Length: 219
Image 1 (cartoon, rainbow, N blue to C red):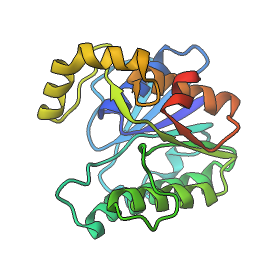
Image 2: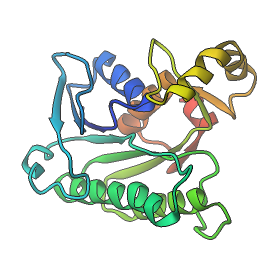
Image 3: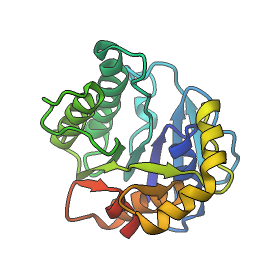
Image 4: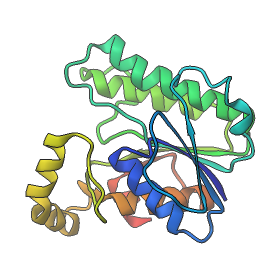
């Protein structure tokens, strides 16, 4: 399986990249991002690309892939709906639309979050935007598309959040997060489990297009 990964420098993307590089069934990984992933591996190739709204300059390098793991995302804190929608909906659909055209047999896996609003009419702005993003991704002509809605995610294997205050919380709360993972899988997963589950659904499918934390952990 040949994989394209967006967001390899983020906390979730770091975990997904790790699992892809460890998986013997994955032949190659193409990481697309604004900055290097900071790793060297025979299976890893990178494209540095600044304009996530337009892929015309690199389209020829995006064909021939079996799966895309889309781990780009931003917090809605301090953003108005227009800005958040651009960064979340517009940029995701720009990449997905390009990939659907180039790779109609691709499986597309998108990381959203617990509480995403599929009705697109709820009171929470971020949940509405994520819901619209999910809905429109599911309409694209991929072989299959899966929406991952993890709740809290514990970083493992030295993976760190790029946001300093978030990383400080993870370090301080590590024992509690490990306990929650065992007793409340509905609310907690890990970077390793997210990565392994993405590979599993890309390879074998899943009965439902939307996966919550319990589904991710079960896989």
